[in-house]
Length: 368
Length: 244
Image (cartoon, rainbow over all chains, first blue to last red; front, side, top):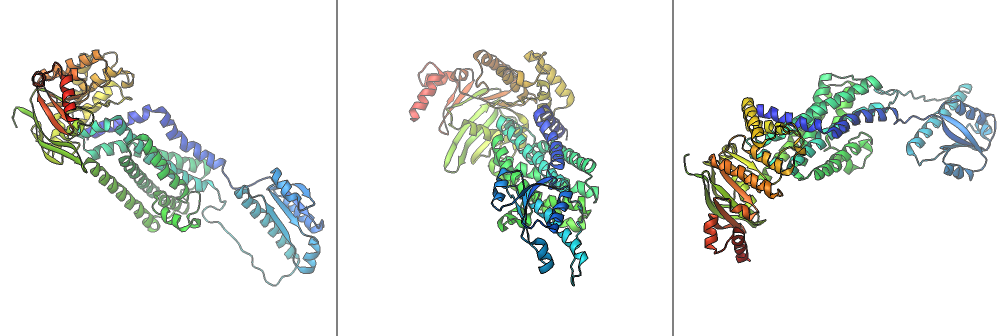
């Protein structure tokens, strides 16, 4: 035990004397959460649009007025010819063009139907998508108002409610996501680098020749990172809770338990990487390509897994982050407990066992 | 376990697939002896040494170090030996004192013992003003001397030195060998590999490994006589040429 304590103290010296890494370790989560929380948003406001009005009648004017009145759009240009649409998009200022067909008002009265077209500049797909949705809903609102003046026989009025995140705040998606990425980074990358560093310096050899058992060396190296990862998790959750009003509906105990499980799975991955790489650089590349990218891209953090092609969906299952994101969203937003999340929890436990088993096997064959 | 041999090796071999790195070597090292383990790069001396210090498993043969079998009692072996490798082996971002405390700690020394040893070591090396500096700031020669002293902290019966003076200037090398002599006089067995043939002359006995086998083993004096030359360097060259 005393040997182990000395070992851990030494690891903390390494960590705390490396000021640059330390700043990155604790600065990064704060900066990322604040950036994602404040700057990254799918909401739109004051988007410039143009109108091509072939009718120029009272109804189209009403619609244009409604759009102008909303805080989302500003009608900056009126064009008269279809050919101008591309010209105006190429200038880049206008994000959408609203086209009214001939005889708009007349058609509404005569045929009970009129056409309007929304054309968006999809070089920025997210903006185009939002503009489209917002414009459509303004038009729908207008239609509903129209209908109140007339009798129509059947009507389906959908009422939508968004559970668990009624305002669709993107920060509710980013806090769990960033927490996952940061914990993976601290636990897997930092440990694999710190273990391979000892290999590179030759001190690992000295440790193996000493009476310390190999597992003591590994546990000693990994232990400080458990501590660092947990403090990072706490910082991120506090920022989410106090700055962005991210709810914590579920039990704190379960939240802590699942977080520690995820940290362990990431540490086990870090150890596995360090058994197969000889230098810090290899370890770093392996961690970045093998862990960070899948954690960001395939975990469902940014891109929904259900819309991925089947092979990627299958691959996403072996990424611990995927399961952790399900767990943490369930606990934070839905407030569910182990009775719902037991399956995901078991998957994490199984992964930890598998990764550690693999590392031990790799390690043994190296010694032979 | 009282024998006069510190190390006893019989038909020790190590194979990696088809390649035989160490081919049935047999030798013994007496207690208190300075034993030079020589060979060209790739001759198999590092592999042989790794088996003796218990971090590589022999394919065949037996080896006893400090009375313990390296195959079955590697834990006991590890407690009785000290080791210093050619690659620098102290932590750069720890001070000298912290390094001593750490390595003393992993060998299970008590706090009092560590304090006592630290004071002694700093005294011996004359490092009073540098003891709280990061090791990074020390010149290489000093680092090697500290590393050697650290390898001796737990008072091992046998010390393995793997090219301890690589890249060090002649004066420091000389001082380093004085430290080795002092330690040998206390009864510690020294097992040292080296590239420098002048250092081979300082050893009580040397073995020369060529392509996995020990081709010569005796005191430098007798070896020179046997090969009818004036220096260990020539002995070495003669052996290497015979193989070619």
